[in-house]
Each structure stands twice: as structure tokens, then as C-alpha cells.
Length: 158
Image 1 (spheres, rainbow, N blue to C red):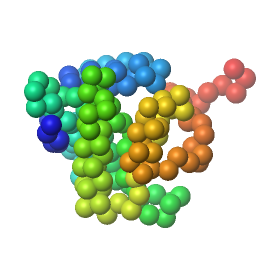
Image 2 (spheres, rainbow, N blue to C red; image 1 turned 45 degrees about the vertical axis):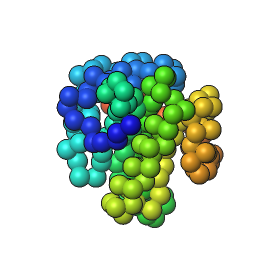
Image 3 (tube, rainbow, N blue to C red; image 1 turned 90 degrees about the horizontal axis):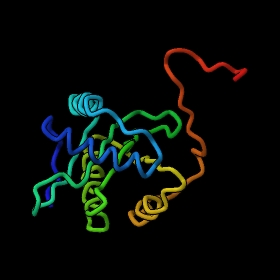
């Protein structure tokens, strides 16, 4: 297995993994062109990254992780946030996620991060168990996620 920085040609493989993750979390599938655009934005930022894991046998992308480094007032420190980690169903429990997270830890440390934050839905027991196996501690700081459209505030009467 090889872990490397993603490139534009990886967008379809990353999109497929984003769709697998959406199926697990109950989200809608993102559009390929949107995944490509966001991936290129992250890759163009000096404070972010997208890493992919390739299977040596098939040479296909079997895992992806995105991260960014941010100043965090709540922690009073620099934090690496991991909004997406996805491993193809057939490659789970084969060390792909561990390898991706090890690379994130290394890069985040090089960029001055003191903490790593990540989230998952409560129903994703496999992800929660995986993160615990890496030494992450589950907290109840984020108990709800609020998502709103940018077009206007929600109507409080609805």
C-alpha cells in the first residue's frame, strides 16, 4: 500500500469513496465536479491536504483523508481537523485507515498542530471503534451538528 498526496487525476476515486461514506452516514452523494473542485482547493492551500492510499495489487485508490490546520480559540491552540476519512468497503480492516491517519499525524505535527479533531455520526460504530483504537477519546462536546443554507436564515416558524 502506498500513501501519497492526491492529484487531480484522483478525483473519480475520491468521489467513489465519498459516495461510500455518504451511504454509511445517510448523506446525499456529492457531485463529482464538486468533489474535484473542493479537492483542488484543499490541495492548493498551504494549511490543508488530501491524501490517498493506493492498493499495490490493483493500483486503485482504496482510501482518502482530508485535513486542514486551523487556529482554534476554543482550545487555545493549533488544531488539525479531519472532516473526511473513507476506506473502501473491501479494504477495511487492512491497515489503510491507520496508514492514512499516521500520515495526517506526521504532517499535522510538522505544521504545528497540537491536537487532531474528527467527527463521525453516532450510528457509525465501526468508525468510532477505529478512532478509539488509534488512541482518540470520544467526547460529548459536539452532540449536534447544525447545517444551514447560505441563501438565508431558516424561518423560525417552520
